[in-house]
Image 1: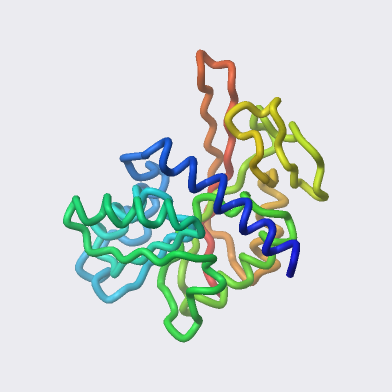
Image 2: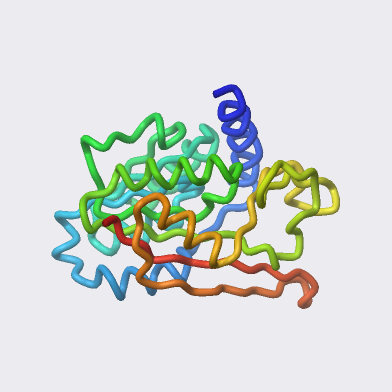
Length: 228
């Protein structure tokens, strides 16, 4: 429990500062395509509940609400959550935002049809596995999880102190990621982790982006997973 608490405190501090420094305005295009494929019926979505874990500035909440869902966001950083609320309010959005670790503020008694989780990799490998099991318990039967893994081919993978498995506490060599706890997994490892938590994989996509004049390679694996 002490290790879990320390990880949560570090995540809240690092990503709270990031959310205030870098306000992202547009939803993840891969999420938008997923929604258009699996949840295209906006009228039908009005009876469905969706939540984003780690909602940051709320960019993906815009996509969820506009697709018709009853929308909720959760962020462990109080600064990020407050900033998200202000952004949503200014835009006239109805989505609610809760502050805290999702394990503490969400309950299986009020299950969801869709969970969006953009950054589960900001945790230890054991923490990720536990998080997926808890996320599975929050979904209705047949509910969906849209989730991204950081791939070990990303340019800053491994640049820090090894914390077991694919997890590293990144150091100054990782540039703007220094001080963050990251876990890196390829498609096979991510799929195994999700299946162990009780998910069935319906789609997997590799996303690759070269930034800063093609000197920094960023790679993710996106999964569309269904609660069995």
